[in-house]
Image (cartoon, rainbow, N blue to C red; front, side, top):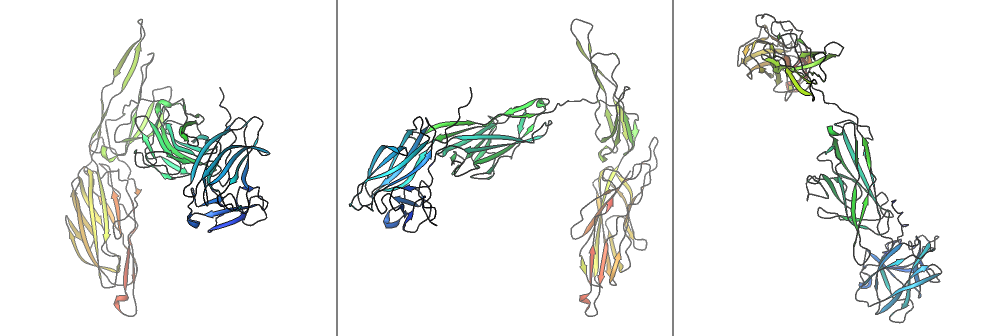
Length: 620
C-alpha cells in the first residue's frame, strides 16, 4: 500500500504579532499596503483605513500572552482581522488563540470558510484581568482550496469603536508532519572494515510544531557502532554528543544496539524538544553517527532505516505520530579469511637476513589446503604464487628476534571421501626452528645546558648512551672531538674514559636496559660559526659459524632533547664490523662586540640526525 500524500501545509504568518517590532503601541498599515516602509506582516483588515494596532508587552500594564507583542482588534474602527490560506479539501486544520478584553468584557467571533462566505465557528467573551485560551479544529470541505481565517469584533466594553478585543498567540494550520531523509557516506561498494557515516535529516513539513521529538536508529546488522560518533550537525543543540545516557540530548543504547537523539528546541537528556515547521526552520535538523563494517557483511548488502516519534499538541489531547526514513542500502564487497603455514630454508640466520618459507599441500587430496603465517620478528618482503608450491620470502626485521629461536610448524586439512560420508583429517609437520644471533639497540642522546653563552663562558654537554636490548652490547665508543672555537676544560664519565686529545669516549660493555652518561665542559674562545661532528661505533664479537654478513641500515630520526639536543642509534648484526654513524654536526654560532664582553654570545643549535634503524642490533 502506498503512503498517502500529506495535506498541503497551512500555517498563519506572524501569529503572535511580533513583526514589526513596536515601542509602547503603534497603529500601522496592514500587509496589503506594500508601499508603506513599516507595516504589519501577514495580516489584513476590513477597516477602511487598512490600519492595525499593535501593543508592546507591558504597555498600560497589559502583558502579552505569547512573545513580546499582541494586537487590538479595534484600531480606529470596528473591523475584522484575517488571513487567506491555501488548503487541501478534506484535511483537518487546528486552531488556537488567546483573547482578552481591554476595558471590561469584550466579545469577538471566529469565522472560518471560503473568502466570500466564512462561517462563524465560535464566540469568545473575556474580561480585562486575564487572557482566555481556546482551541478547536476545522475540516476543509470539498472543493475549497482557499480558506479564510478571520476574527470579527462583536462588542467591546466602553462603547468606543476604536477600543477592544486583544488577540495573541494565534495558530491556524495543519498538524506537524515529519519527513526523515537518511544518507550513507561513502556510497559504496565498500569493504569489510570500512567506516560508514549515516546522516539523518528531520524536517517538519506540517503546520504545527513537532513536539517531544525523539529519533531512533538501530545499528544495521553486520556493523558495529563506532563509539564517540554521535553529533547534531545543524538545527537546535548542534555539536558532539556523549554515548552515555543522561549526559546530553543523545546516547547509544548498547542493549538495543541503537542510537537515540532528542531533537528540537528545549530538548534535554530526558525528553525530546519542539521542531518548528520548515516555514521557520527550512533545513530542519540533521544528526550523524558512524559504524564499522563487520566481516559477516562481506559480499552482502547492509540495510536499515531510521524512525522518529513526535506529538501533535494542537488538539485537546496530544496525538502520537511516527515517521520512517527510506531504506538505506550499502553494497559490501566480498571478503575471504586466509590461513597461512610456513617453512624456512635455513635454521640459523642473523637479523636482516632473508628467510624463504615454502608451504605445500599434498597432491591429489580432495579438499586439501595449506597456509602461511609470518613468524614473530619477521616481515614479508615478496610473495611468489605459481603452480609449484608457494614461496614467501620474509626478512628478519625486528630487534625482538635477536638472540632467540623462531619456531613454527605447518598444518594441512583434508578429507577422506572413500566412505559414505567425507571424513575430515589433519596433518602437522615437524616444528621448524631458526636460530637468530643476539642483537642490541643503542640510543645516544646529546644535550647542552644552554643555547646562548658569551665568549669566555663554559658550555656543558651531556652525552647519554642507553642499551634498550634485547641483548648485551660490547665495545661501545662515542667520538665527539671539539671544534675550533671551543676549548676542552673537563670530562666526567660514569663508565669508561674520555680522551680529550682523540675526542673519544670509550664506553665499553653495556648490559640490556643499562645507560651511562658523559659530562663534557668546554669554553667558547672566539666568535664565528663552528661545526661539531660526533661519531658512534660498536665493536663486533668474534664471528660465529653459519652467520652471514648483512648490510648496515640507516633511518632518519626526528626530535631532539630538551634545550637543544640530538639522538642517534647504531647497529650491526653479529659477525660484522659496523660502519660509523655520523650525524650532521651541531651548528654553533659565536658573535662578538667591540664593547663589553657581555655583548658576546654563543648560540648552539642541535638538530635531529640520520641514524641506524632502531630495529637493527649492535651484536654481542
